[in-house]
Image 1 (cartoon, rainbow, N blue to C red):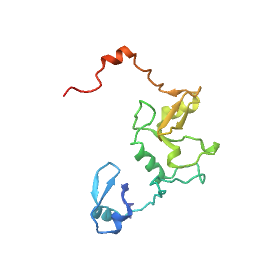
Image 2 (tube, rainbow, N blue to C red):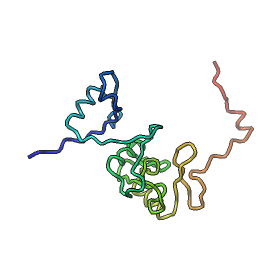
Image 3 (cartoon, helix red, strand yellow):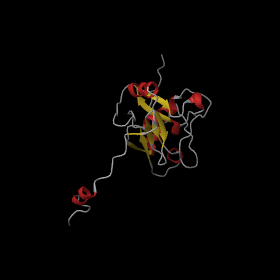
Image 4 (cartoon, one colour):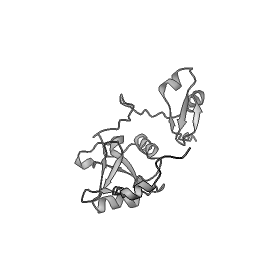
Length: 171
C-alpha cells in the first residue's frame, strides 16, 4: 500500500533549486535550510507554485472561487504567523479565513483580501457587523459598526506630563 509523502511547506526561490550558488530556504517553522536540502526535500514532493507579482507580493485566485485553496491558506497562515489577527487575541486554534471585502460583495480571493481569525472573532465580526479595512500602511484596521477604529487611538499626553518623561537616555 502506497502512502502519501508528508507535507512540508518550504519557502524557496527558484534560484535555490536551479543553481549551485549557496543560498538558503525557509521552512514554515522559520528554520533555515541550505539550498541542497531544499532540492532533496523537493525530490519526492508535491510542488505547489505560488505566483508573485513584480513587487514580490503573492497573487491569489481573484474572483475564480470563494473557496481558498490549500496553497493560499498556507500563505495566509504564514503571513499571519498562525494566529488570530484580531487586536489582542493571538489564538492559535480553530482558525478560519475571512475575506476582508466579502466575496459576495466583489472581493477577490487574494492574499491581501484574506485574514486569519479564530472562530469566536470570525462570528463576532459577522454577527455584530464589524468590518476590517486595509490601512495605508498595508496593515489591517478593525472598525466598529459606526466605522470608528478599534482600538481607538490613545489621546496625547498632557504637556506637563510629557515634560516629565525623558526623551533621551543619559550617557
